[in-house]
Amino acid sequence: MIVGSLPRPTYLQEAFAAHDAGKLDKAGLVAVQDRAAQESIVLMEEAGQRIVTDGEQRASSTLAGTGLMNGLVPAGQYFAIFDDNHHRQLPGLAPNFKGPFKYRTYAYEYLKLSKPHATHAMKCAVIAPSMLYLLYPLAEAIPGYSREQFCDDLVNECEKDIRGCFAVGAQRVSIDFTEGRLATKEDPRNPWTGAKLLDTFIKLNNRVLARFAKEVRVNIGIHTCPGGDCDSVHSAEVPYTNLLGPMFQMNAGYFLIQLASEEDKEKVYKEIGEKIRKDADGVKQVAFIGVTNPLNPRVETATEVCDALVCAAKYIDPTQLGSTDDCGFSPFSIDLKPKHGSPDFAREIAQAKIRARNEGTKMAAVKLGL
Image (tube, rainbow, N blue to C red; front, side):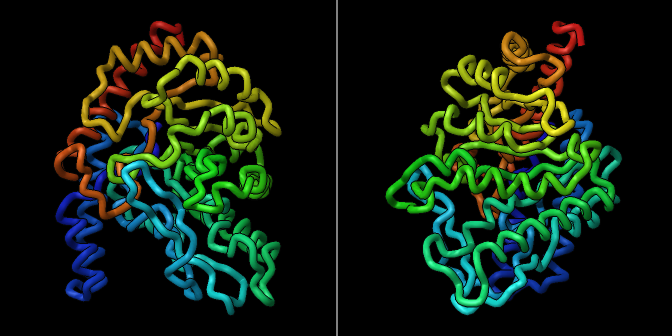
């Protein structure tokens, strides 16, 4: 199962910069995005990916992929401070913000533009309400627009986005939850990570999932990773023990879980096997474990992928086990992929990793008798 993003080619990153500088109009940018989306779909299909994405080439970031509404100020909370000391900062709700909160653009609108290019089924990633929760001030209230009203609006908008994705033709939808592991980091430079928000996040995301019948939730997933931006991470040192138990309390059908870059994989396999549920409000959960590391330019072999899955199957019911990449290959549009040398080479590496994952997964299925 693919997570979603691919590195944006150099020509697309240059187009984003030109558009931001007022040197390329919207129509010109869309034309370049369309080319990159089509090339990304072909890249995945040629790598043997059965359910593809457009590489999120139309979105400038995971957050901007939902095209947030007006009424935001640019200097909100930091989302994350990465290990290489670069950071990503969120916008925030203006002090005089008046609800309701609504997206300006929905993920399904991008999917609708890209789907005609695909010959395989498609999936789409949407932003989690738990991520957008961080747009509201951490401690203060906004006069006339309570935190409770904001959460109601987040649930409504996320539901609308997911339903729109399925209506356009997505076979699967995943909710990006990279903030999950970060929520217990307690980084003094980033106050929200010490505010004990994980339980709040889980409950908020579950409110969205509760609006879907079990037959639909089978195809709604959660993605978690310790970040993957500019070949760096933000929370890899946080023990998975902090996250896995609460995470599997979300009544999603599947989970895309970073694991290839984990130091003690078997410990995590074992905990997944103990925490994953066979009945999550009527849905049997599936864990797609990470078997390729998008931050490392070394391409895993199919045999390595196979061995990881066979090992994981000692702890996780094979009928609840699948494979994925640790993270999206590039969640932000401007990412030069420093460990890879260039975003264009990184795209070639991504295709090779996806191909190895698919070949190794088939090998493991044979060994496990699936």
